[in-house]
Structure formats: C-alpha cells, structure tokens
Image (tube, rainbow over all chains, first blue to last red; front, side, top):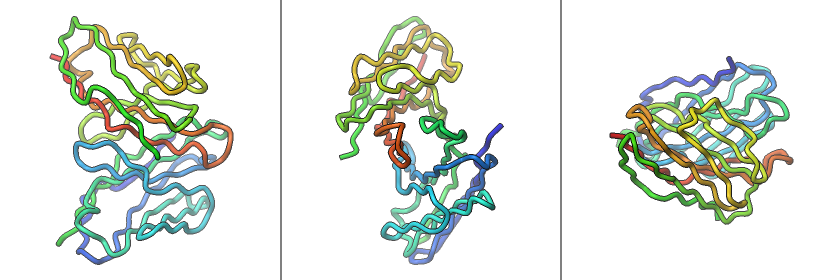
Length: 113
Length: 116
C-alpha cells in the first residue's frame, strides 16, 4: 500500500515564527508533490507543488523535496493566525499516472497570537 | 482564474431519494475528479474523468453514478444512499495529464451531503 505520512499534530507555533510541516512517502516512483491548506469546513486549497529536488519558494511558503530520502516539507515564514489550518501533503503514487494523487492525513497547524 | 463551482452547497436526502451533484469549471481543464471527505480525514478519490471519459473508478458502490456531459461539467448522481455516505463531496479539475506540472488539482467548495 503506497502511503503518504504526516504527523497529525496539532503543531503550535508562535505568531511570527517559522512553521515546519513534514511529510514522508513510501513510493520511490512518486514524481509530483503537493501541499494543500484546508480550513475547517472548507475545501482544500493548493498552495504549493514541487517536482524536483531542492527548494521552491512562493512568498512566505517554501517547499523542500528530497527524493532520495522520500521526504517533502513545507516551511511557512512569519506565521500568521490566518495560517491556522490543516495542511495536507499529497503525492502521485504511480509513474506515468498523473491523474491520481493520494493524500496524507494532514497536520493541524495552530498559530499562537 | 482557478475556479471550480459546485451546486448545491448543502443537500439533505432520504435513503430512497435520487439527487445529483453538479460541478463546473471554465478553465479548459481536461481532467475532472470526484472526492469524498469525511470529518478529520483526507479526501478519498472516487472517480476521474479524462477528456470526458471515465479513467478511474475507485471501486465506488453503484449507488454513486458519475457523468461527464462535456469538458466543463461533471455530475454525480446519487440513489439509495446510506447514512454512512454523509460527507463533503468535492469536485476538482486539472489542466492536462500529458505534461509535467500540468495536473495540479484545484478543488471546488464542495457539497455537504447528509443522508437521513
């Protein structure tokens, strides 16, 4: 069973600090990785995608991918109370099967004012 | 614009009813998806349509019947549901399945379904 693993949290981070969210995946052939933010009662919102080893930055968000270690992370700089949400990590589990992604169970992030 | 719309926002139905959920996107995306999400769980893939053809059915019970009338619309027909089918039903779309990076999935707001 191919899996995406995340710590369920809650992860509590003081406002203004860096929040670090981690994700591991079991399938070495996964090529594409996504981070979604989901507020309670709302639908998931795509915030980052990453396909190559290394870092990808978008505003206060940085995604990091290490395929050798099967590890992907999301850093949120200058955390704000509005960043409090569940963050879902997702990966496509099959080579040449780009239409299917599987989700981790999500990490609840709480930014402390 | 990455908007996917879904109607209705909320639906309450009895176990003998027939209802439909609707999803629409005008981004020219060629893949559309139905997911089911229970509280405090991640979305679970149900169906994938690629270029208006069903490409994935994740062993979903036949009381759920998807339909893709055209490249912009996706329906989910519901019949004889069970109370355990109560969940948030999410539609998503992605641009294209051929090129790397083009299959980022964008979700609609969802339909909150309650089966009584």
